[in-house]
Length: 345
Image 1: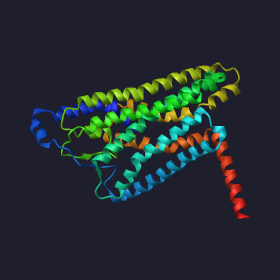
Image 2: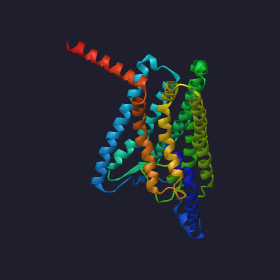
Image 3: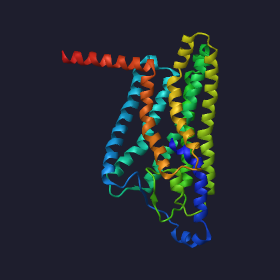
Image 4: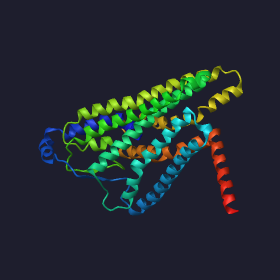
């Protein structure tokens, strides 16, 4: 998901880089170096061996926690009939996206921490870009869909089950997956059709979109326009929908007379609101930076935030702040304890 957050901000820097590379002084060099590469070298976070070992241990632990936490959420929703509601249907999709997004980046990063030659084949790089970019887009659309679900639950509770019926939920989920996947497919195809320079070193932890585009030896204006459009469609549009939904939700909550009623209404969307603040908070923080575009280090940190931290925290947020999930977890633990007691006897 970190893909979309700094793409818009990086375009100005990309254009400046392009202007330098396309100058007459470098024209002959460009013609000589235009080629198709078979692999890329990811420079990653550090070249120091001891640091890489420490990073390997840290990110391995966080990845295992991410996988375990998200699959536990999916299992709880699957086994507890009380959680068979639209909100938890979308939460299941969100957990699948989170664990898939982390898997598209972290395992490759772990391998490179222990490898002397940090190469990634051309096809693998294209696949990594497709899955990470697609899953990032899917998550932003899903957050907007979940905001609409919370809007209906708070603002029109009596008709909630009528409006958020199974057919609509399925269509909204499919729309999220299709929109993110189609955008990613288009971006991946037009990016990897570009002839690359002989410089195949990517100063990043993964095959980031602009990091790969910068290696091209031809005019990339069309790619930059496509990046701009996709960033607006899959980042700003969902953000505006989330914002509108929560304006209506907050307005409705403030009209509730009783304090207990306001608390109950707020708790129905507290977990989702926390996740939204976590995701879009990074976007806002990134956009208010004084420089026009983030540095390479900031790009890496943004990617790590969305590939490692967010997928790990989301299941914790829904477990800690959600009474239904906590109840389902306790019920599952009770059933497991009873089963082990019987087996022991």
